[in-house]
Image (cartoon, rainbow, N blue to C red; front, side):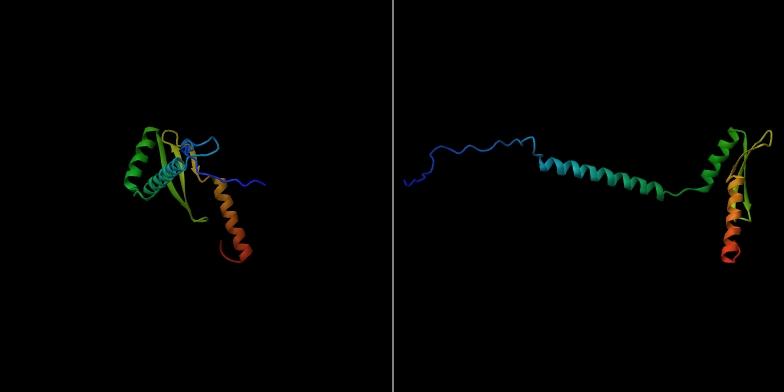
Length: 127
């Protein structure tokens, strides 16, 4: 067997291209996009929290509500149902007095009444 000796080359080494191949993604760009996305999500969450914590003034709401109901020629009345311990709303036409909507509906209130009675019977307590 012959022995081989390796000598250093006198030619300069060729460096690899700086452009990534199609299988590689630049890590710096991925981090930048990820950071931007996280910042957008955080900003959106902050805006939602600010809106939730914004103070709502009942006087402003009632004024706006009254102006809308007047423009639509509606009468809105709030009442209390003692059987289900809940407030309900009647919306009526001012001219005819006809009930347009009741919230919650009569059916829903009757169901709640029945459920309270059932709970009272099952647990031997007043619903």
